[in-house]
Structures are given as C-alpha cells and as structure tokens.
Length: 122
Image (cartoon, rainbow, N blue to C red; front, side, top):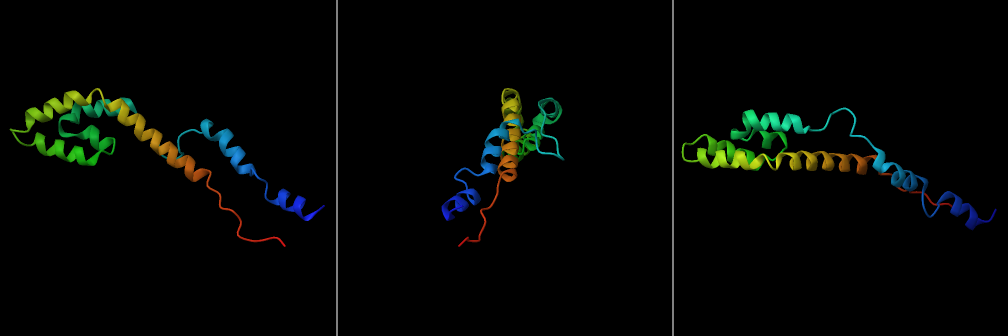
C-alpha cells in the first residue's frame, strides 16, 4: 500500500461522521432530558397570565414580557396591554415553534461536532 493510499484511508475526503450526520440529522428527536415547549401550555398561560406577559416569559421573550407586565400594572397602560394580549393569540404558536426549532438546531450542532485529529503521519 502506497503512502497516498494510506493517507486517503486515514483521512477520507468525506469523513464517515459527515455522512452519518447528513443522513440522520432530520430523524433526530428533541434533545433528551428536557421536553420542548408545547402550544397547549403556551395558550393556557396566554389565557390566564397573558395580560401580564406570562406567555412571553414562557417563550423566553423577556424584554417584551417585562414591558407588558409594567404596562398592565398601570391604569393608563392596561388598555394597551389588553390589546397586546388579544394580538398575541395569533403569534403564540409561531413563538413556540421557533423556540423548539432553535433548541433542536443547537442540539444537532453540538451532537455532530467532531474535531479533526491534530497529529501528522509521515
């Protein structure tokens, strides 16, 4: 076996883990250990705590959740918070889907990360 054949066997142009990653990446379930956010829970939180931004805290939109909480505590901001609460019924499902997809994408990128070896063959 020549040196070139040996090197190509040790370092193939398409590594086996890249083939496995591209084939199995779409078949992965959610990350183990912690379940994703559910639309049912988000809408229940929206219904009972939505006026105070509870559904926004649930989907990790902390900035707008704090603003909505502060608005709902004042008499002047309460009508604005009520309109905001009604408008959010159309967006909660998108936020939950985006949160779960981002979580899944981060999990997949960590799962298939493999460093190249740092040694040389002479």
